[in-house]
Length: 279
Length: 254
Image (cartoon, rainbow over all chains, first blue to last red; front, side, top):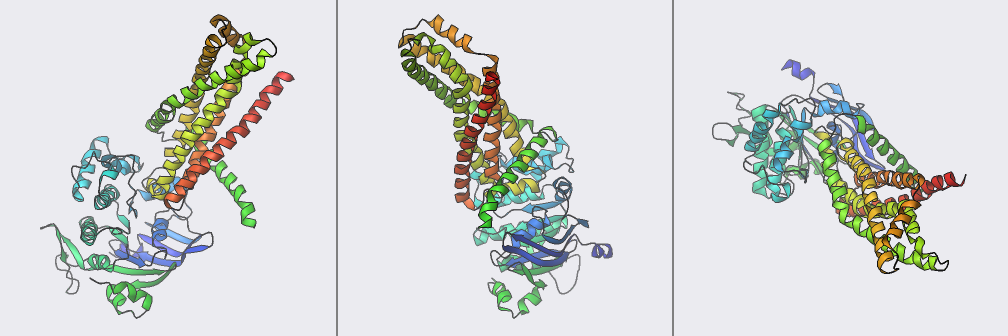
């Protein structure tokens, strides 16, 4: 644990990003440690997606430095970035499955194309099937993304993000555009992935209940469902949910960073706006 | 005001960067052979009907109109010469390229544009592939191989069209038509007729990719990219055609 504390998995150091005249991220600094969950909230256009894309090296910061697994990625060349990206899974906002490929090809894409993965050809199909089983989408291998419902597409995209078992996962609005029941099953999958594989997880969302689930629930391997975590009495048999911090962005600035109790106690009108929808 | 002046230069710079990276990737690993084959099928084989029709009617019309002009000099039996030279040097390459610009530049732009606005291009980068290597280079290579072949086909079909008019409407003997067609051609015509489609292929594929990859703003942006790519590719083809023609004509004259 102390070794982890010294080297954060993801570190933003005074990062700013802007598009033409619009500032997307302004002077954002934070450090995420191994095994931590972070829930990133904010109004639309507050820079949540840009933050994830910057962490993945898809977007270069105008100033400041981004460290992923201790390496400075902000000045890396595209080819060097592939190495880092193979350790990060990302779920894109609208799933971003490849339309021209079927689900099997979509999910196997990172296994076959990420040069540092070195997956033996015989292992590809079993791993794809395992990932699809994880998201409860067995039997859709031959289907194309356009034949699936929105919730199923989101599941397939999660399977594609986790198939390489990356230690860091980024979810961009995993529940956007889904009905509340489907949304909860998607968050349950995220919690399951986090608790089974001990991944560091960043979730962008505008639904407070998603953050609440991530912060207070844990995956129970016995019955395969979520259960309320025992966060306060300490860790008996790992019954507590991993440390979850909330971050609130406003017009590219990080205006809040802290645990749920602090978030709920906040009197700032912009911040408390996100808490009110607690359901 | 300054932004309006800057924009075309930035576009040209970006286009050159894309071209440079696409060309460099031809030699670089990893190679996506499957994608090249798939694109050859889509761009080349898929364009066969349109190319055959264009070539056929270009030949028919050329023979018909040229016979009118040749009649004034009493040289109707030279129809084959005119059809042959104008098809191989000019109409075959340019009409085929314009058709391909309409079909494939816009097709590429809308496909890549849709991928861009739905974050599939970002996903591709996130999952370890370079979109230029995976998407642009295969399209460029496939077009560069297929367009010269399609042009040869269009030239030949056009000559058949010319024969049809000569034989049945102008009552010329078939043998005379084909021998004038054959004798009219020089190496200069053939090199020009093959170099042009090779150059046009880069315009068609890269303009389509360029507008597709810079698409933004949802489905509306995809529509805009599609239109722009077709207009830009067509104009660039006509401009390049003039300069390529100029090089070869002055070679003969001097």
